[in-house]
Image (cartoon, rainbow, N blue to C red; front, side, top):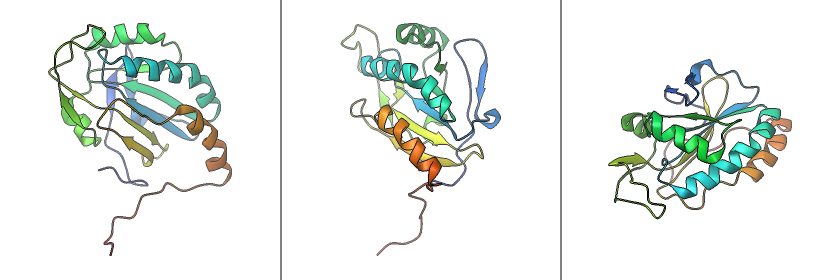
Length: 179
């Protein structure tokens, strides 16, 4: 489990455009948003990330860089990027399942062809959304066991003005005993 205000695991992945995303090299004004998605086989992921593609310029204006990534190989990730019209949103691929687990993501086994006729990988990670501060520490994290009911980007975008103006701290950082 990742802990707010503590360093997140390293993350370096190839991008669909041929470059490399390296979290340690990111220099956002406020945070980097890393969104792990299930893969090409997931129609809910496509709908969700089309929205982030459209909102990425607004996140950038508020000091947040964006990245969507999965364990899909380069070909499947490129097909996904085309499907969502990724021009603003960076799309990474080839995340190893051990790396996904290091980030606290749940792993599922494939169950054949999906409702949109695309074969699920043998194993893949379930969704996660993280905001990582420029110092490499976790500000916000959300992991899920299902593709449904993910964090809504619009309220998150709206909250950025408040958290920046009030210097609102990352929450959930306490790891000591509880009674």
